[in-house]
Image 1: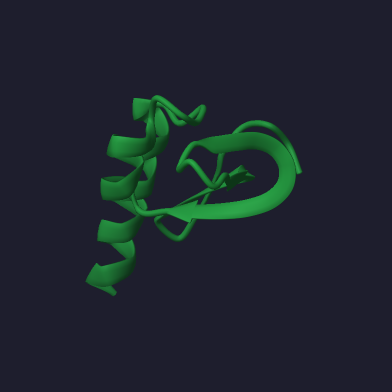
Image 2: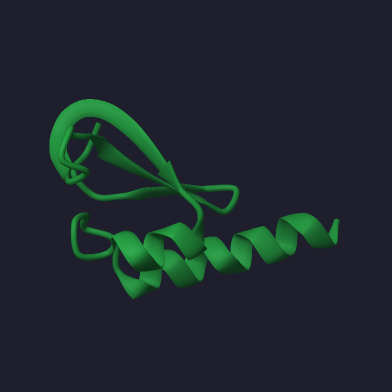
Length: 66
C-alpha cells in the first residue's frame, strides 16, 4: 500500500494503525478508514490534505444523489 491516502466512494483510506496512546503510526500495513468529517480532525496525525477531504466529500454527495 502506498504512503498517500486513497479515496474510494467517499472514504479516505490511510496506511497506518492507531497506537495505544491514540496517535496514528503511518506505514504499518494496516488500513484505517476516515469519513471526510473525521479526516478534518485527524489531519495533523496523517498525510490527509484538504484536497483529499474535498474529493471524498464530492464523491459522497454524488453517491448519495443516485
